Image (cartoon, rainbow, N blue to C red; front, top):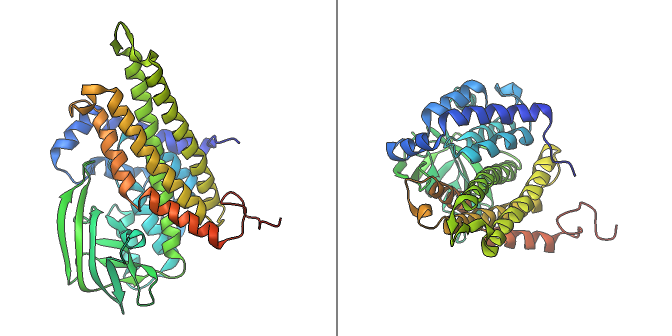
Length: 371
């Protein structure tokens, strides 16, 4: 199979790579780490000016109206650069609102503000909660709490999953300036601001219709996997470069069989995840069912990020734990990406349940078993 990007898709990747290269050198990342800023605000303004925040937003809402493949090309470059900006959250949220709210009162203003660079917090915590939804929607009011929501203290609105009165999760849009909202800010280990959000009979702006939650969840999984793919590629590249130069017992440690095997295992994991990710993104762009593919990609991405980052830290030895050296950031990003949208075990269980409920030939095909 040919996984090459088209010329136009490559142009998006090149634009992103050039932009991130200016703002995400090791020195500038170190400055951001110690600045206390919630995210890279200057870089975010440049992303908005370049239109990178509107790739999958429909043209009717002021976006470019392109597909997930174009967004994947940009997010891989973002992952490589460790660029702390909310690219996927903004446009997936806006695209969902444009498709599933039918211009509900107040939503058009939220969309316009987001297209101008305003922030939207996104949380799907209720989807993967192991003991019931932490956030409940009764009537048109929210009650409950969400934890460590990225940019929850900086955003004016949030798109969140909430348990409904019928036991099903729904996507709702809520103003974080409304009555009954309490925000407790903090900082995630990858230097992105987060906040715990508490809702007490908070009125919602809109309840998204149809399969909005599934639509957003699958694109969130693809986006996180794209970031993980990019971060892992760069982490492996830097690690291979290091073990080629670092000498022990008179020869490069990259010539040791154990180190070679660890690097090969990381490369194999990255290629396996990349294959599954590209299949998922293609199916999303073709409007094909994607539930089992999404669960598979999420489980692979969790394994990829955690295993490769641990190995990379290990072979760097003392340099790996020195926070003045850049390698620790990949560990922080890998862990942060792995905890969003549920663990590998959660998604493997969901994949197993899907296989039990469907008579298709595994998750790879769309045909029934008898065909």
